[in-house]
Image: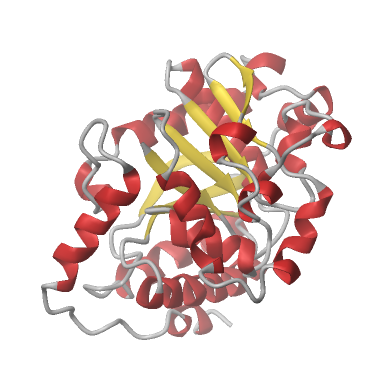
Length: 308
């Protein structure tokens, strides 16, 4: 199972839309997909047509260890399952502040999950708090959706600093494996300029122990599309609402790129079949600790600051 956090500290860049429709595209290809809502706004839950006021259990209960992942997961449709969120999730950070091991609660919950899936996507809140920290501690991969706007450069710089810190202190297997341009308008010179700046940055600032050293800037650009904006109000993925629009085409192309990523792209070995995820992680961690680690790369600000 590939476990992927979709995150960006900047809001409105297409995180939830990407989680829903990339997951939907993979489900259309026959893959079993889990979507995990870690945002107190519960946009992912609402996007999937679930009434958040009617939920008995949510991701909040998993983080409080009062329910297991298996107990809270909801079959949504076809091959998609959802870990819903509710407004009470906003209180989780304050309630867990004194809990020992609070950064790895989600990792432990996933490790105890007995069912198999092909992909697990986490929709993270637009902040670097305890909820996002739990996600980064639990995953092996991070996908970063960005808009081709100037302010995205600043937000990306700050996000990479946070990921580097988590990589060094909590999760040595954390890798930024994908960057996706959303709401992309290829007719504007600004979009092309920002895309080139980001590509240049990742080309020149990727040390040996840098968590984004093998990042793939996806060839697929998610074009601005009104159907993608309309589908949440119907509680449907783009493949249910408008399967032949540009948005559906773009996310299916992205799914094909994600499927085509090799083990080298992901940079972490996939656990053997039926091997518990936590056990595989411990095995890789033990192997990594026996080797001398190269020095950490410099802070990721430098190349992006030149743009300012």
